[in-house]
Amino acid sequence: MTDIKWMIKAREFTNCNCAYGCPCQFNSLPTNGFCQAVAGVEIEHGYHGDTKLDGLRFAGIFRWPGPIHEGGGEAAVVIDERATEAQRNALLRILSGQDTEPGATIFQVFSTTLEKVHDPIFAAIDLSIDIDARTARMDVPGVTSGHGEPIKNPVTGQEHRVRIDLPHGFEYALAEAGRGWTRASGPIKFELADSHSHFAIMHMTQSGVVH
Image 1 (spheres, one colour):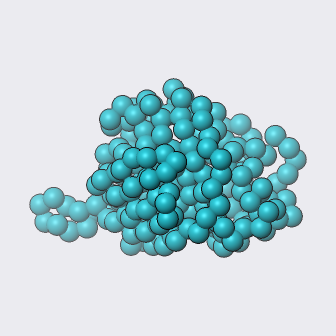
Image 2: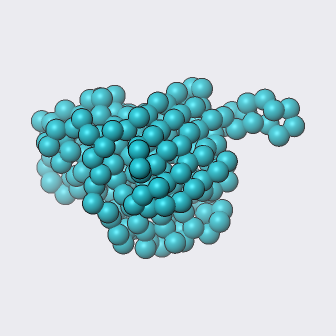
């Protein structure tokens, strides 16, 4: 870790292959024994040292052959094509867990579980997230596309609202739970259908989630 300070305050949409709620949020094993996930993030305010990150987007595609903590994972990161070289380098350092206290953020923790990290992709990221409505859409041509929506009551068809509160989490403090559909088409390929998604404010620094 270096002495560089950073901060991001952003909106996040994540869709994984587990049942609604995602056992990972409760330190339980994955629904199907393995993990696949896609996340999209839009930074409202952020910086890495003297480099501002306001308005930039990034996405991540992940796959693990078993529970995340057992390692052997694979990841691909997409950085907003609008980012300057300095901004690209700053985001890649944050997302790879550098300049971060050990165990402080999801990025740093995930970095210790990855066996293969593909070369970063710089591309247009079409992303819209409405946390309160529990809806989102993301499209990165040739890489991934998907959407999220509220969970529906199977009897009445009405929207069902559930929140996940993590006072000591490393990703967010509070998330709205939903469901999602995603297709990852390259360099990591898989499809998710009607599985867990969450919508949250991601506010963190090199020392962890800001409460």
